[in-house]
Image: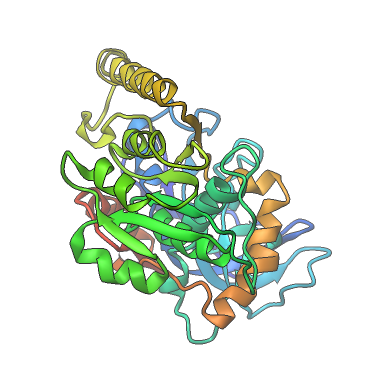
Length: 373
């Protein structure tokens, strides 16, 4: 029998440690993967840095990670969609409160994942490319289609023109790349923002218009580009994105709702490496409160409704299976959805995940950090 290993976070603020992990049998509705690639999201290293205030229900030692691609190694009772040897991409949900299980987190050789949050990947798609998708796709799908977010019409193989435009602020982020493609697959016109270096790439993903997010007049320029179009809402990614979307929606025709896919308006990377309670109380909390209060005032003044996206919320609704089980397989096979942004390989093996955290912290544009296994 194979043996398992994982990148463990053994205590708050500590570096990851590679050690043995239990090899768990899949339960009904689950599959066990032999992971071949995992992707790193900011929330992974934020948990490492912030300690107990983030995902406080998780006990140490713990395994992190949401994005995984690999081949099916075993299937649980009742699973008929997959068989051993199948190549799949999956959203790992072990970090979530309703699961809270190390066996179901991504950063290990043999993670357990839900079959209905997994999708087969085409033969010509690498594991490294596929691994960029799960949490970004899930977050974008929640923001666009969940009833408590924008509540838009869901995507399909032959989308019907909705006659509306979605504003996606931060199109070159991993969530932005997925949001552009999902919006187009649902029949919406997609307008997004990015740096000029990424304009052509985002247009190839399907964006109808791409505008520069930089400069004090960015919101005004985007608002002018939306004139004559009915807006279905906005998704905001990145620093300052929520306020910019509020300004744009406040002068645009159509829905005035923004779904925010960003952490509170605090630069977590600017905090000390081991932020203690005093630091959190004196530096983070005041900025968070002030930032959220400022957004609230700006939104109320312009008549804009706000919501915060929890990226894995679809796991508890029919949107999860609708996305990963019903839509994504044919969308990947037909090329309607491509793996975007491209993977930036940080290394090989579980030991490379920690350096991958540091590489992500340095900043990437139109790319996502991936580690091969």
